[in-house]
Image (cartoon, rainbow, N blue to C red; front, side):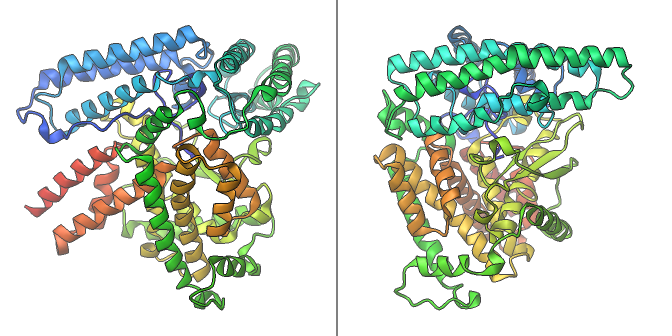
Length: 610
């Protein structure tokens, strides 16, 4: 999700208005450093603080509340892009951190200690993030709140439309969109003055996204789809009144706001946007990227170290892929370039889907294959179900190959595994099995949905998360395909290696873009030389890395740490190692920083050693 899934903090930055997961910060101290004598009073005080913090966080960011299934604020849309709101958010983060640190970790143990470490970890990172003016560039092709509102208003997102009250709430919330768009433009104008602007090519991608959302007639917009979900028992007069209110909202308020945003981007912003593509080219950009590396990986690894890890992983995976050539009936000599293998795979007729319907059918069929195999590796799974859906047409061109959206905790919405059917020829069939394992089961659906069902955890942990843990788990889940017995087709094993390769390439190109001065073309050239990627996906991914610096680092760094911990547990426990127990230990406390995960697994190993 992914989506993946995004992260949330209390108004972290204006551009993160609709994020779903919590922010990160420098690694916390080892939980083993705290006192060992339990202090129930301190734990109770902290639990009360966490509950108070979470209530404030939802009230200040009601769209976040909607995304986590809390309907109390569905009618609200505060101006979270307002600099005054952001300043207040910084003050509130300091307030909560000071209060938690005044209690301190002394006397905490188990989940209480873990919650304290995660809470302070995230707030420190949030405060560090306020150093950088992300609110001055709140819009790009990957994080486009105009598109997110269209998803909500179409009834395909988190906003419910089950009752008249739900429709009333949306009409009230949507009335605030024009003001938010005005603030967004004001911030972007301030960004132009300060030299904090987006790469021009990213903003050119925004224009067709906005064009797809604008229409003269209300009935021709995505927002009109909500009217198809009016309660069936609504009488005719009430229905006509509601339809008229929707038409007025859409035609008189929303469409003018969308047209003006589109005009602003095309006529005012794009001419002032930059030709460079790395965050290091912005004021204080090197420090900014260092912060993003720390927050996304939850490690102290430098950009240079991560770049080297990426190069080494690419070389290792290439060797394994070469070994598959005979099974794929591809003649490849030891000195042949990787392009021989990649071109041979692309030429196979079974490497492609026939059409979007075929893609969806095959994903659903693979789901039936995977489900009965999972108990061999897992004795823990979420109660919530999930659906497989196409990415909506208006955002498909710039969206990633797949993503995951978490289920609502009230059961009103299942998890959603989105698959992209845009340019079907560029969606290789050999990615199907690994992509499913990553986004659905046992990947994001297992981890994120299960975390939301952990009722004994503070809500900030149930609904928060660390990108390195979340995406690291997703990539680790892909690696389980061979153990599950699903990569029986050499083509599918090649696809799994290709996806692992892709995450390793991300380490190279993200750091290349933002720390080594690479151009967009440098990134594309490296992708084409080292993977079988097609232009549609390569361009989309390269521009994604430009839009959200550092996020792509989380996948491989997280997976490497989880795999390292499993290898350590297997080596130390020998015949006593239980893979289902290991997976339960990783998942049962929700998402945590990687250092916290390591300490947790070390304690698990010690307990098993007996």
